[in-house]
Length: 471
Ligand code: NAD
Image 1: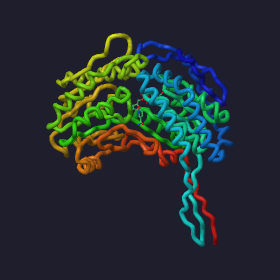
Image 2: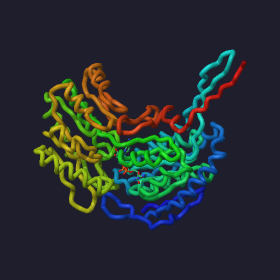
Image 3: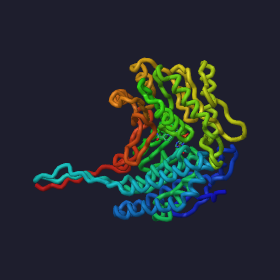
Image 4: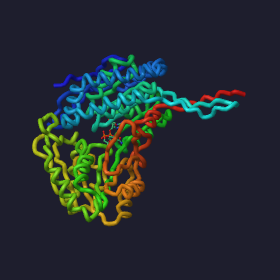
């Protein structure tokens, strides 16, 4: 049994003033712990504490900021086993994947620690010296989802701290404990008020996006919530980074090498049980390869051991929550009604948990709901195409544009197709790979702004021009 962490406001453990809510173990479908819920009055306290802490934190010398981030990484490392267990209990993923998530959190923290904040000389002439400096924004509000909860919290918090901002973070109410524990650990390193946590449901998120004391919201979650945040944020012209939903297309060309590609496609489509923003979510396969690839994907899917994330040997965990599972079931039933072939899986497993095996659906028309909507779960529609221009048009006929991929042996040909896809990242012979040094973000209704690398870091700053006259 895990220890239940507390909210931290101004460096103090705080009990939420609202009625607590139950956190469900997706492997059983039953509540395993109560989480206290904070109130909007407590949000005011957290924002005030973060604003007060900002007065000094923003002037912390660079070397000290870097050292503190490395100390935070040390703390995560020392508590890795506990954090991984919390992630499994509340998020559901198999232990090996939770350990990978904790490893990613450490790596991202260390990488962000070492990033430099550049000063750009715009003009150095007898008349003037003009420099472009980067200043922190103030209090950053972070709102996170339930799929990679610890890693995404780190993606938000570390660049905010590295650039001299202070933070109020609200995790998803479906997976709060990993983030509350992370903030406890961070508070062993940073001064009181620099990082504060708020557990609660969408009301707290909404209050954050409208709060006049918060200067930026970094949000990862669904497009409809991102839209609400954007309109709510107008009051004080908050800066926004919105990492929203996607419906990534993958295109398999005629010359693709199926021996290599089938396991890689399975991995990238079903990463985290398909609950990954930039997972491959609809696969277009040339007719010459279609039957063979569908068969291979179904074989890999049926070899998975599906079960609770803490069970030995499990390779495939549950869907995180009942609502997401209901959507996956609904989309598969709709596909069946359209006459699709469900090649494997396609039914929830017995028992109370949200276990649904990896499911491959063939024979669908491009207009089916399972192709057009983001399933965000363990089912992959595979669509046959004959003409390259047609398939590029189908891939682009979407309101969202997070990632996309092209799979083929002739890399130059794949590159020419890739360059025509409308998305923030396009992979060739891969998908869903995110790296701390590669800016990542979406176009269209997948949001705006990027995370990672120098470009991601600078999203937590505003520009100040210093113009020194030499006249
Ligand atoms: P969600 O939008 O329902 O919730 C995300 C967070 O927003 C939660 O903390 C929630 O409590 C909060 N929230 C809900 N309503 C709010 C409101 N009105 N104002 C402010 N905050 C509010 O998303 P989810 O179901 O947790 O996550 C799944 C979605 O996230 C998928 O669409 C997925 O594609 C997307 N996602 C995107 C990325 C990316 O990097 N682009 C990464 C992970 C997930």
